[in-house]
Length: 251
Image 1 (tube, rainbow, N blue to C red):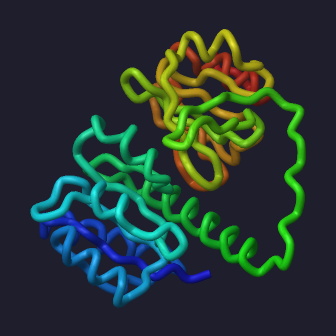
Image 2: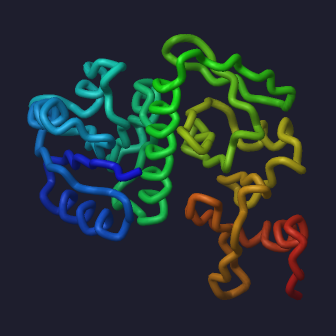
């Protein structure tokens, strides 16, 4: 499905960069830009975008305040774009599809767009169903994540990769990212190494999601996941990761 995209940022250079990156992402259409929160609110109402790339710190109305005030039933997918990690917890509290740090990397932007696309597709499918199908019980291990409404259980089988973010971790799934307060060492003790492998001091990856392995030179590699994101493998983890994936281990 084609996504109608609205870009919101008070920095012209940031808007230009995002526009250039979106020109490389198929099945997306830029329908407008806004330079502050109030303009963005009007543009959302008038243009009905599927996805809003939303800066957080803006004059008149912040991105977080704008997203919090949008009606849930008619809200587009939101991907926050900011230079500050400190807002991550608040961003995911308003059910953002993703949270990108400036300068935006193309692979992370593409991952965020595909996540928003899947969320949009699933939402439309749910709306078309006359009766909701009963939820299936998942007997795999999961992680309980705190949300504004309470707690949600994220099955380990649904997690593509896990990324450290200071005192938190980000659990990246196909449809959204969850922020969770835990250390990487504590996660390593609790995760089944057959389901999630440590590839870096700040990252775990599900081996089932790895579609390619890129050589970076000097013996370093990066794992390319099914949605295109590339996760670098730390130097001390390379041999173990290659062995886990069944690759020839270089001497």
